[in-house]
Image (cartoon, rainbow, N blue to C red; front, side, top):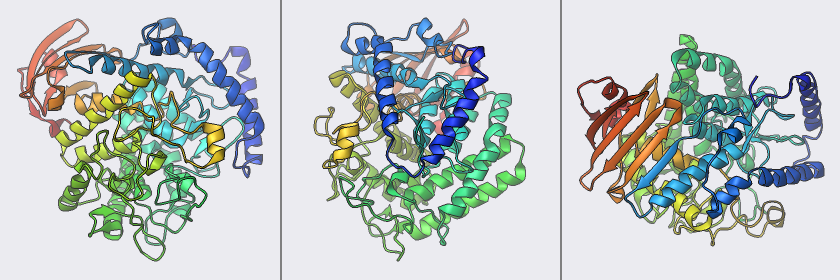
Length: 564
């Protein structure tokens, strides 16, 4: 029994109560807004949340360090402290230290014990969103992956457990469930998590969820695939980017009918799902299924490329039922890069738009709408930066070998999150592409219901995907990779990070890592693991096998691509 388990005498009762609540949710499925009792429940639990985590609040104001004592961690079954970073030698060193620590403090605060909603631990994106959300959970699991993969797996399991038939649901709370789905990224997240686990654990994880995820893919094919083979959202809310100019006006008083619009983002997410299913099939020993899903992914890539590419603008646009492009330069137009859709020439045109200051290369990069787009405004999905879609575009840059561009954007993104925290002592839902503060941001301006229920700006204490700032630093800027029990490093610190000294502790791997980069791009470092230590020197963009260095192998470097 772990500290996150319910008391033994509660075990026979909880499953029956969960079943009863599920029945009530199904009975109320036609009610789109949360019930009054649900709002009261979330309000009371939010107050409790603030009381319990007063230590974290004090850490924000500087009265205490931002830390998680072992006794607090054990309350949710966590045995190891989170990754710990100490930066020095750079003007933003303190902001980096505090922001990095705050992400993990909030990640832990938003972790929920097994309860009436879920039989396992599960994650809420932030205090105001007290439910299990599909794509939020996919990204939250990635943040947990560097800390505790067991928690990451449970976060994903909660989404699967709360499915409605074969459909993974947009959101489920104690008293409410959505009639929609959301971006289908659970298989992608699960496959990435499996890559980091030892082979037996990876096979067990893949085998546990493979059939359910295949059934979900079949459900999408039956209910969301168009005759042309691409995919359409049932409603703007299903996309997760509901007030984007491709779907609605700012306050959502005019929502576009989306059921016949072939969506560039949805179709790209399905490619990622298919790739993940192929990988999970290999782990599960199902070779024929792996070939089937890999082939389906390639066919879908070709359809996206043939039907959604706009040669004039060099972007992938949604197409309406008549085949006309929905000509708005949103970040959805870039996501086919993540899915490996474009050839090299088209990829370069996308990269040019990504890096252009009047495109997506803003101070805090990758806004939800291109900076020079007439529809741009600082209101949710109409211009602000969201870390989840930005993370996807950066994964696309890595996929196409644009590693230094990816690292530069990743550095500006995570530094932006950390600087805003230094200024305002909060982690937010979305960010201003031009400023390291949130004073100009809005939430569906003119929508009185949203103003009443969620406020007029970005949600605070939100790590549903903003926690990916830490992943961008670890995985892209530092190029850390943990796979099959081995650690590799591919430092891509940009010139703006010259002089930065980093000391990183990864308790899950029992590793301490020291790094320093100079203006010429030379990186010197040291690694310690289980009493063994070694030093190394490498160049920006060259990979180091840290496990081999600790084993005493002759030091050598490889291009980063060989390590990914």
